[in-house]
Length: 90
Length: 159
Image (cartoon, rainbow over all chains, first blue to last red):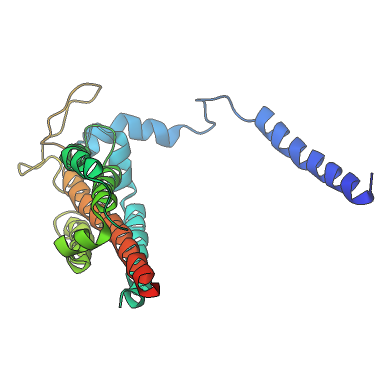
């Protein structure tokens, strides 16, 4: 075996150990460490926003500014595509 | 993209309204059922892309100009920001849900807990879903349409 292969195996083993140990010590599924915000949203969404769908309430009400950014990304993508392909069309 | 066979075109003309109705349903019920403006808009834009694939980009761009789609997309963006600014005017903050609990449209607050809710709930969320849905439909469709038409005309130039 060349030195290059040995180095590759060692580096691969170290990186694989990182992932495996992270997966072993992760918190159990469905039980996050901090649940304050989840509990608040689940308890108060219907009363505060009037929406039965909590995800939409978070996306458009609690985190509305984030959605504005997403909309801007889409707008920029459309503007860029039209700008690039305008010359090809003629 | 040239048009496909008659079988594909016929099947597309039958399934296009169904896919479009499903996408619009997901947008309109965004505050009640899973989904919303982005997801329903993606479904409806896929239906439009299906028409583009089946009928060819030339036919499609003759029927609907990409400039009009671009205007629709900007309209969606402007109404989204305008709704957010209305929260500043009538409520207390940017993106404030000022319609919930009021006597106007979409003002009903449902009973807390699981169960069915009226569609007349959730304040500005349905209106924002409509705005974002319009934006996503027009935006995704104009991207696909412009790309397909540009590459088609490029191929014809080379011949």
